[in-house]
Image 1 (tube, rainbow, N blue to C red):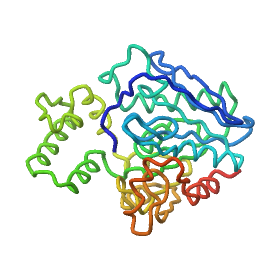
Image 2 (image 1 turned 30 degrees about the vertical axis):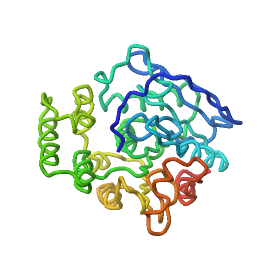
Image 3 (image 1 turned 90 degrees about the horizontal axis):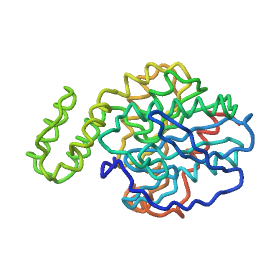
Image 4 (image 1 turned 60 degrees about the vertical axis):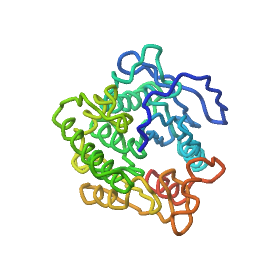
Length: 312
């Protein structure tokens, strides 16, 4: 998961507009304008809202830390070819959706949930789309999962979504690395404090990226949500998709979500990585390349599963 920074510095964004695409700005809580790309031929189409993953990941699936996969853009174009509309957007504090007075410390996880609700209401009430599905990738899986509980959506799709609270996911990722036990124990202690609603006053420099003071309010609000409890609250149809070559989220996460859900279908997709592209059969070669090579195509089984679930 990408915790390098949640705030993408303002920059000139030059976007190519493709056929059936148009830029839309939606006013969300606090007056923040959320900008995104609507790819649609007509409001009578079924529409999938694509919710980005963690950190400063933008509407196309890229971030300034070096990831350039274009995964969400490719997904939108693939669904467009199957007559399914999409809306993909820059989250508040990311890319085009950064207001001049925005600060990282003002952001909490529930802001993203409320933003998705606002987007759905706008698409339904102002643009007259009546058949909307939420598709959340990585961190966006939990955002969409909670938003779908109280939003007028036809279905919910989890793509590479964690099936455990975020502290457990991060601790597993950390434990897989060559990091001293003292640092690992410090991470656990810090998470325990945040789960109690207490800020951590003294953070070692080595952990500043994860526990810096300005991001602690966000982490505290994120830790309140357990995906296996949240998915039980959904009454709409659910689709859970997970790749076997994902090095950030595991097949076990998908199993956890599927077992907890009251109404889910699921598919474990061979070779698919966290960027929704294919590694080799061993999952090692090409995996890192999928994060940085926009010429690599999106996994077609993923597209097929979504089309089958949504219906044309």
